[in-house]
Image (cartoon, rainbow, N blue to C red; front, top):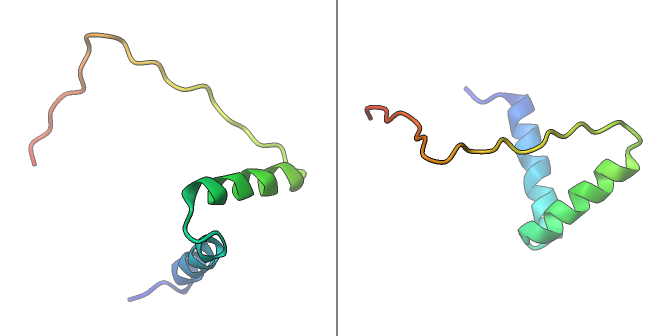
Length: 61
């Protein structure tokens, strides 16, 4: 069963990507422009640093 909200979001995402010929750099630049102009506080977190020598446990597939 298709979720109409998910379908609407996917269509909006595809329409936006088409505006920029699916150029990810241009899409991201436009999203950052929209974010800056929206007037809402945007929260971003610093990247998590990896500890050298530690590995993520392997999981069975």
